[in-house]
Length: 298
Image (cartoon, rainbow, N blue to C red; front, top):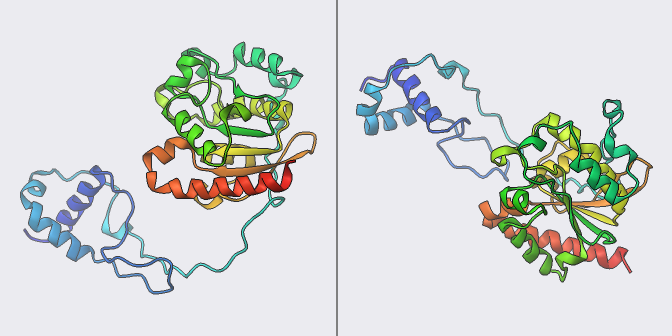
């Protein structure tokens, strides 16, 4: 098969259709050492692929694809990571509520019962229409540890309690590794209603629910927050860094009255179920939590 620009474009379209959307390298390299990245050989890669799949490629019509050889950026030089001190308690403030929340029903609540009622009777979020239950919370309201996830799943929506499905069973196991019982902590979510199909909540939905979780934290007033997953971390700490970078560090959440609460990000149990190789990292996070509890709680 003649290696023309058209055949190269067809190959790129083939990869795009298969879900490949990031240009890497055909030469493995260690990103933790300082060296020059291997040169990406599109010609060699395309030639090898074309030889193996020439029949399929010849039958594929050339589409108006945004992929082109000219659009492929050169691989940048990646320097070795420097020894940067980890961020610790006190270096971050939680995002403040904007004036857009105005007369949000959460602000007039003075008890957990009032907050639950306000959430069950809320009208400002489309998620309410599709949800079976408002998933409020579970556990001990006087607990000094508050665990916050993202949103309910199908099991949680059916039962009306957070973390009751497979991810909930795994959370119970995770807590038990350091001697904690589910009944001794308090568990809630950023979003109290299940997004249809377990899709990620939209920015509008998250913004509407934000005052609810702020008030929830204020009423529980725990000593430490355990934030499960990137959504909880981004929403409550205002961080743009990914959970892979932030997990295992103690940050600071600031309530509206200025009171600060320690916050420990870690992986969401559902992520651990998809990526069991990360169990060791959660174990390390739990040891950090255990050490913090021994130093800061009677």
